[in-house]
Length: 176
Length: 403
Image (cartoon, rainbow over all chains, first blue to last red):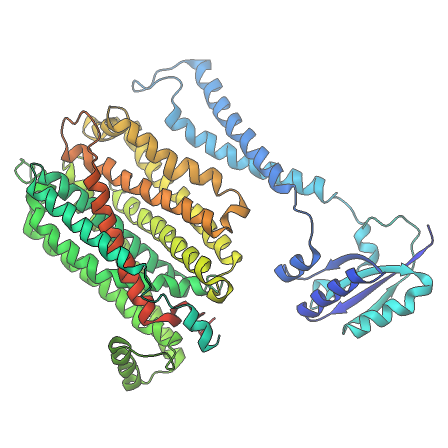
């Protein structure tokens, strides 16, 4: 694979980022990613990302937690078989508390697990083409092109109203 | 938003409006027929359930706007203004409460019982006096909040009726700045929220819990007003969805609005169920006969146990699993169906709470066609009130100028 040049357009306006994303997708340049200092529905809509699987991890964690919570309460109660105030050994109403709490716990664990696996964390590769201003007041749109098309991509970002930053080439198959 | 856009928001007196007048006539006829038949207590039972349900819907929906303003929320957009239209039902609700006095002999089973000292609180003059005053205060705060909230959205170019003209003249006399109006909204809104919690607790204690005068639950008041907000949100979603379906993009109500209020509705579905559970839990562990009999009759003994399961499935289990899905929350038609089912479920929940006390020894659930017809009459009243308000103030769904 020929080496590629990675160029970031740094924007101050959210709307210009959306416009740049849409224009990039129409162009021959390779769109890589957006770094944004704030969550943005407009940018998320423009990116048209596939729906995340993290929610399914959370749901599965919750269901397992629900079953596990009740199972834990029933198991511990049947180890002693103590009748308290005439209540049954396996008493569903109070076990709801344990079931509920472990449902939340399972959901949280499922969510974190989903987040780690779906975003492939821990990873530091994203730092290679990153501008620290994207944690401040700038939005960064990262794109790649062949080295001979570098001027064209820079010109493209400038026309979109961005400040341009060119990164040194790094030999790797960039799955960023 | 242009004048044309605001005109598209108008719910005009369309050909279908007469249907709701017919529903009111049918409801009144069913109620009168019930009174003159052999079982006037059944008619009053349906009347009480519907009074509680529809009043709670209006009170809860208006609370939405007050809460949005007090929390400085921006996400609600036109929904906030739309919720203020439910104020139009307040005068009707108040009159309906006064009418309830006529049925006191049928709706308060404790009237001729030995109350063991509770007579100080549970007597008709004191009960009606405090509830009348409570509802009056709540509704005055609601109107005070609306009077100021409307001012921020008012469009003087809209054609004026007498009501609009008189309100507009009052505003011109006061001549307040927007900042001053917002401050006044904060005061009226805060008072409304406080009164909502206190007055609905009082109504819950007096008109629902007192039916079984020897049973007490200190959390019952909170359970009652959380339920009111829950169904108020449901009714607001239905209204927003109908306007969205009829007016499309011009309504200004977007999928994001439905998603956000759907999440709030889902949250209050959980909170309502939680408030039921925490009462149940305490009663379960306490295991005191005078407390447990209330739950046993309603959840374990026929015929009420079937109704309890229906309420549990329709108002909690169903909405819980359905509303987990994001996409469903953004679909107006589906939300209309879900919210309607929940409101009908809460109607049955009122029957479950009141029914055993008003129908001792019932072998079957006391339901008949006249209950449905009386309910339709109340629905007609609600739709006519809101329709009138939106006709008078079509700009109410505009985003407030503070947003």
